[in-house]
Length: 239
Image 1 (cartoon, rainbow, N blue to C red):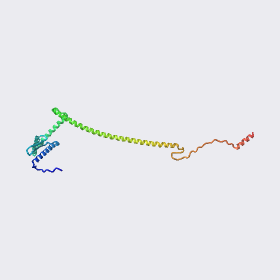
Image 2 (cartoon, helix red, strand yellow):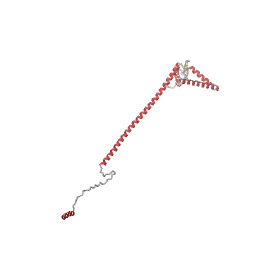
Image 3 (cartoon, rainbow, N blue to C red):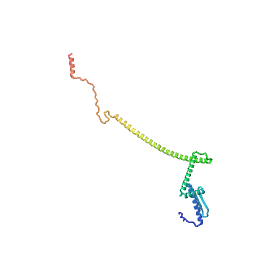
């Protein structure tokens, strides 16, 4: 069940009124303290109870808060007067110049300049500030270097994977080339064997020629005809 709404009016019961005052007072002081810390605001709070007891809180000091309040109230009251307005802005400009001079002096001291007027305690505080600043710079530097190293490692892993894939592709291409060479040289040797075993009258353009005719001369044979024999007999008879 949610809390019911409380009517904003005076609490008649004194005990309940005192309890509510204590709770709301603590909450109000807590909120004022949080406001001063979170927002870097100068806060001054005063609370008087029904019995006249004072409860206060100031982020700096109640006196400085009152002085600042009275000063601003007086300046705001005289802003309608041009002379007072001019004086107000002159004062603001002087304050800004003072703050700028202070910041420049602090910067020079952080750079190691104009340290003659500083004592041991001030120098120690300055050294602590420089060490804290240097520590923060080193931490930031380490973070940047760590992130860069991580990124470079990721890129190296990607390049390594690409190289592995390229080597695998090269091996595959070499295997395919070896198979192609094996097929080409195997078919060529088979063709040469077929050419060697084919007849001499076969030509490569698949036209078949008639086998060549071989001519051979035979030895002459001596034949004696009858007329020559008769002539020889007649010659013998004549002698």
